[in-house]
Length: 432
Image 1 (cartoon, helix red, strand yellow):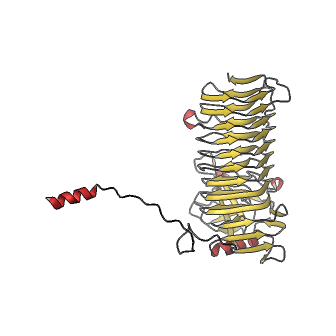
Image 2: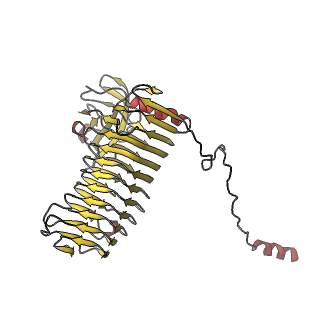
Image 3: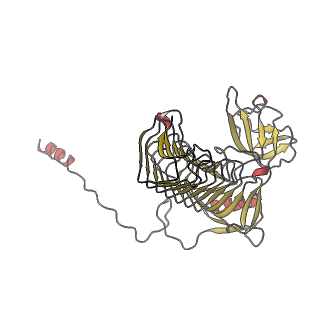
């Protein structure tokens, strides 16, 4: 019995954990994506109108650069000064840095064309037939829009035209949805200027995007924008001017750990910045969001995000927070001249769907809401556990019936304290 007893005793002796030795001389090792030297030079090529590795001013030239460096595991594509006219998206790859030369590097969206489909296409098809093919070319980026069978909402698919016979075009990928004439199916030559799906660790820096809003159809911000990403991780967007798009400025959907800083989103038809559904831990810092419909729109399920030191001015709504947007911090921003409300907590479908446990701290809100009964901060629906602390909320146009913070009857656990409030008829009120 003694050997059996020894085995039992050994089984309960704890194994002591030891710290791993420090890495003092990192090396590039096959399959190790975590540790390698901090290289002083990395793979880089230039694209531009002249004197560049790739000479050209179209989306094809930029895409050639992105694909080339991606082939070698990543690197920098440096865009030289010039205006690049796009008929399709620039599609990013993992570990690629797209670096402009400042405001003189302009990516310009060509005017769009829209036509109806002349024949029905089913979800398994990889071709479409256009009622009017004038102006469409091989290589064009397009978006199809239609109402599905029995559906009241529109659906969208983005594709590239890759072959043709007359007015019949092959697509780069199958449709995977029905586009029927009974659903008012149309094809539009609209697309995000820069985009990507299922990629990670990429950077876009130091360039300007012009969406040519007056000459383009609207593209819903859940599918496009000057910049649009879907299902990605660890994206940095820095020093970018996203301007004049008939849709969103910068939109990302189900993308985690996105950093947007020192950017401008201006004169876009819909949202300036759109951290989209399910995106975790966005950091939105030192940006100018000006004259959009909504400056900063927290979509569905945005959690543990930080919005700080942004200037949000002249939008219809400054900041909008709603559906399952929880545990976010909005601090040290300047929000002014919003046409309806500075910060809005949306009512959603009831308190189960509202944006709870968000903090609004040390912001400056000035002259928000044009109506005489407007509120600078409006907390609607069953929103709960909101902290509004240390803000300067100012009205310089005469108080009228304006209120600094308005709450619905269904709200709970709203903390409003240590704010400096000037020029309002009432500091707080509960909506009737």
